[in-house]
Length: 405
Ligand SMILES: Cc1cc2nc3c(=O)[nH]c(=O)nc-3n(C[C@H](O)[C@H](O)[C@H](O)COP(=O)(O)O)c2cc1C
Image (cartoon, rainbow, N blue to C red; front, side):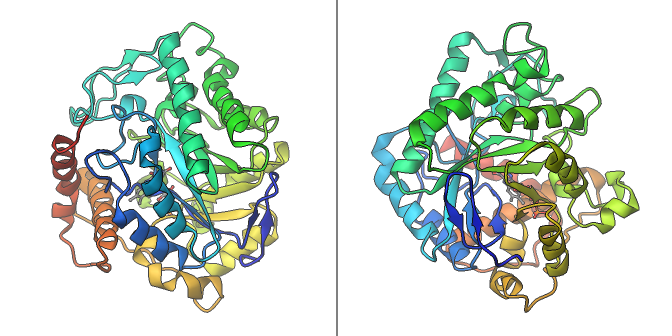
């Protein structure tokens, strides 16, 4: 099943059901453009045989970065470099889609001390994030135009689709959540109002990319925070998305405050044993979506075994399997996995021994591997967990001061 083709509503065809989900690369040059390392990374991932590669998040605004190494899709002058990246990434007949984002209040202070956000609700994490400024109508309009421009550039440069990032606590996800969106105008309040920015962006992007170009949305099943975006609200958003022309819905979950997309299967996740056995964290939520929507569906997070992937595809629980970390730790095994020659992609678990550092260590470990791959180096497994846990802060600082803002 995993090796069968899938035709999307817009008519695009994916050669199989395995998708490399977005992983931020952090390697852009000082002018926020892609570099040769992007081409190397994506040509290698293209050679794995996966039907679709989704790029790490690219941003629409140089001041609202997820990482100081993000590419910013805001300038026609970078078209030649974008074209080379797209070309390398689809070398083996797969699709390559660009994940477009704006970080909102999750932009760290290395980028701006006054990030834009729906409301002035500050992210309190290690003192890294400034107090946001509530967006004006003009700011909102500029964000819509930014997404549209980025999608247009993606299409012009040969990427074969786009994904609008509305998950993981970034700007569009902040608009969806009642914890971070306490606006009293047409962009806040009811779930219809909180979804308005996402829906407007989708409609406007569709106008410029045309009917036959894939548009995907990454959405949280929930924020996993008290008073935050709930499963019921997520289903309401899916009902609204179902009326739009969307080619793929990817489900994930969590924000910077609760990194559910990394750690849901672990002991402290609070998940029931029955759910953990099902390997993919958001698979139970998929059933609820299936009942109300016909948008092709992908779940990301936790998939590792061939039989389980095939089971959920055959049962029609999902249409596509999203995987991220195995494309780093098991990059050379993906093609055998797709052919059914390898039953399982084993997880590599890094532990510092200090609960408060585990997420940072994991994030640092994977970031370092991606940077290595971009330089043509291989996987390095013997890394100090403690060093990995501090790596990102230092790396981001160095990268940010080198940037031309
Ligand atoms: C190093 C790294 C970077 C990531 N960057 C992004 C990103 O840019 N955008 C995004 O939507 N998710 C990002 N994610 C989350 C993954 O897409 C995915 O949801 C998560 O890793 C769970 O899938 P997995 O269990 O197959 O790894 C990232 C994950 C990792 C490990």
